[in-house]
Image (cartoon, rainbow, N blue to C red; front, top):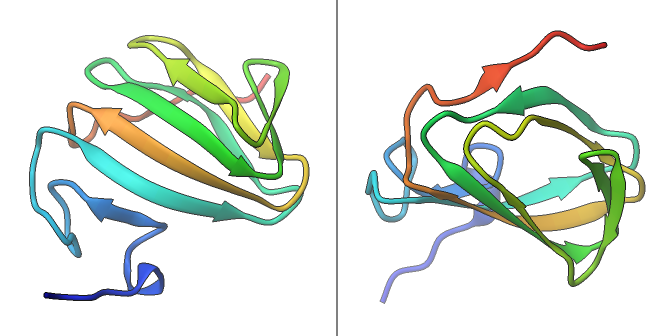
Length: 109
């Protein structure tokens, strides 16, 4: 048996082809992301990976819509969205496949 701490991971990412990682693979990437109300990520998209975001707690805004605990947002390849935590929030994010340098940030409108 092994144990680890999420706080030791980079921005919540704990499975994937990066360091640190609890399981090194390029098949997928998995993170538990914690946000404080008002935190924002710039509009971006992926050309290789699809990204699945599960809202565990709180409310967030993506694709111009508000999502809450229990919602799952599927970002297909090429879908562009920004992200704003409306309240403190916790999300689980899965990217399939794991793909280095596959985040393309767009200029804000």
